[in-house]
Amino acid sequence: MHTPSASRYAHAAFQARCGKSGLHLPKISLGLWHNFGSVDDPATARAIALRAFDLGVTHFDLANNYGPVPGSAEETFGRILREDLASHRDELIISTKAGYTMWPGPHGDFGSRKYLLASLDQSLKRLGLPYVDIFYSHRRDPNTPMEETMGALAHAVRSGKALYAAISNYNAEDTARACAILRDLGTPCVVHQPKYSLFERTPEAGLLDVVAKEGIGCAVFSPLAQGLLTDRYLQGIPSDARAGKAHGFLRPEQIDEARLAKVRALGALAAERGQPLASLALAWVLRDRRVTSAIIGASKVSQLEQCVAAASSAPLSSEELKRIDAILAA
Ligand SMILES: NC(=O)c1ccc[n+]([C@@H]2O[C@H](COP(=O)([O-])OP(=O)(O)OC[C@H]3O[C@@H](n4cnc5c(N)ncnc54)[C@H](OP(=O)(O)O)[C@@H]3O)[C@@H](O)[C@H]2O)c1
Image 1 (tube, rainbow, N blue to C red):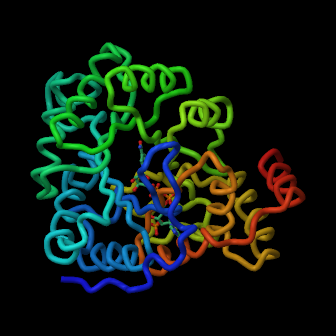
Image 2: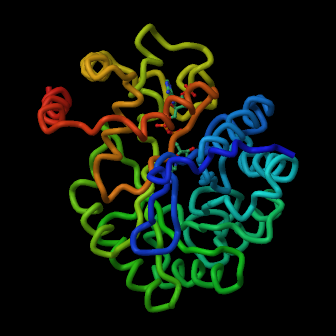
């Protein structure tokens, strides 16, 4: 069993309320999409998860399909929970999701009640838990009535298999509708999980306003653009980096010269502030008060430590924000 650091809650401002709910998320959450699968080194995965908890990162974000192989990230985390963190379960916020392809046939994907509830049962088995804290519809299913998908989330909450209902990758309009349905069902949506970073600003076009209006939290994913918004790719593609791995979701063709020119310019601005680019990128997403948490990934303990430290970065001045916009527009 792991003995966590006694100072893990020393920085009270690291925990933020999720919208108007009672749920609190750390400013930096750890996502297990990569680096926690059956193909990855279990000792490194364990070291990253335990260091995270020691630093006050109480939220671990999973999905049914994280691996590879799909499902294996939940198994890895289930093992860490059992062997190291079992006595701290009530401090942890563990989320999982269903919405992308998980098994063959029409009920192994998207947003039917059949898929969501069967998938949640499978996730709980892999995690070795009676309930998760947050259960997400991972994406909007355009061919299933939203009432059915939200009804499945509400059922998950009422049956005690999830404490809170949530949505991910829903656009602004669908988010407002999903929130209204879940509110009517008595199981309000507590958090939305969109992709948001210096390189992905779509939520600014309306989603962040809806999130604020609905009083829900916003836990943004891939705030480092999968590692692009760091120094990782400045000297080519390292074989141990995501874009260098056959199963990595970031592909080498996404790392073009135009992107790298922006990364270098942002890196120079970060250096002027005395911080690495990863820290600047995280300080930037967290500057918006509508953003509750930035869900990062890490392949090394040192990366995680740098990301957590970013939550206490000096605020970005309006001059710096203007310079960032100019770099991105170039
Ligand atoms: N809801 C959804 O549809 C959805 C989709 C995607 C992700 N997510 C969630 O969001 C989480 C995070 O996504 P992500 O992994 O793409 O996030 P990210 O933070 O944008 O990228 C993580 C990668 O950046 C690199 N990195 C992290 N810290 C670094 C540092 N300090 N210096 C240099 N490089 C650093 C590492 O790359 P290397 O591995 O190359 O070292 C790491 O694996 C996922 O695990 C998942 O929980 C949700």
